[in-house]
Length: 137
Image (cartoon, rainbow, N blue to C red; front, side):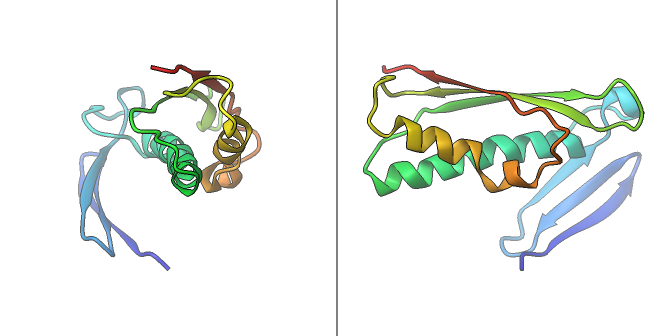
């Protein structure tokens, strides 16, 4: 078990501490929900976790097969619902992979991204389209 501790600092801000490492980050409510939008919002962290999870599992597969993914870029566009209740409605993701489109491990790398632990933890109502762009450099 990993412990994450959180302190409410007031003004819709929190400090979050990762138990094992002691590293900290701060959150802020977004401007469209009474905050200043000066830090990641809690739902921004969900989008960040989604992208980082895909990158991490792809990295595990790549390392296993001696593939260099350094420079891979992932962009996650988070869209909130316009109806109640307020929730994440869509996480549209683009993954730019610095390898040729005919790479022999393409299916395995894409499959890892599409089945990462965060993906499997999201509510099924959240749309999660992923656009893989194979861009040999």
